[in-house]
Image (cartoon, rainbow, N blue to C red):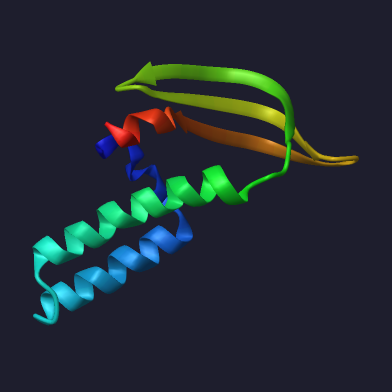
Length: 106
């Protein structure tokens, strides 16, 4: 499950962790329940991405570095161009982390 903790580094994940930490420190919530909430968050993010995201994105850029560790690919791109339909956006540096979603169901 540690592979999919990447969702926790998103804005909503950081806010959730902060709120859970505060609730655990105040005694409102046990650490075990907080952990279960985080695991459910990972599963919910996976499900939402599989069922609700329908857009196709085109990405071009210079591949600066890449690595594969613990079933997670990490790509660092420079001067990348993201295109959704006819519109595009140029971004100086991009880090992409990719995980196999089938591993979640194991």
